[in-house]
Image (cartoon, rainbow, N blue to C red; front, side, top):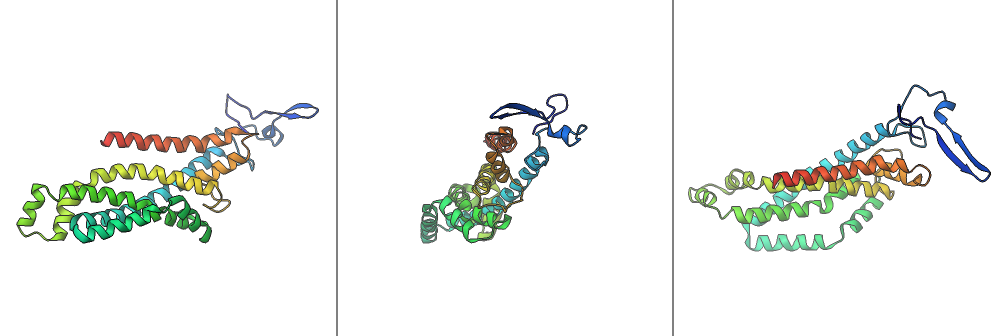
Length: 248
């Protein structure tokens, strides 16, 4: 039920076979001095607090998974692009094989085997999330490693480690940051989907996906319960798009 100071008082009309009846559970329970901006769920919990708690959990999962994907994908792409030749061919064929498997199928099968929890979701997001990072890293390395200052460092006798971490990595971070901005909301969406279909976080946990599940179960009676989680998910996507355009 919704209860907002000066806007809604928590009253709702119930339609029955013999007519309609207006009830107010807040007044029936003696709750007349407390207001809930987003209303309460079926168990009486504050939807405002649960929405932002769920956003925090989803962002933590997405941030950890994205950071791990960045480390794996960046190193994989740098090694592939920098050394080239047969190393690059073999590593790219491995990516083609892994990338040809539908992500959703792999993630769903993995989540059915593992116990529900944050660790399982992070592992599921890691399975294929690093591939795009590696491709971007490789493409940038192929361009940067032929520039004059890299060739000059190689001519002066600089080793592979110096060239990679002092000359190449600082000049490819821009594209990687842009990809990070897109990867985090994508991970949030995937986590929400897994929780929504029941193979994500366990029952009782709070995330955007579980909030959507709870709201969907009551959408015909209380459709407002879907709005907080849905608006936050769309907001994450819009923020990511804005940061992407700002970095271009």
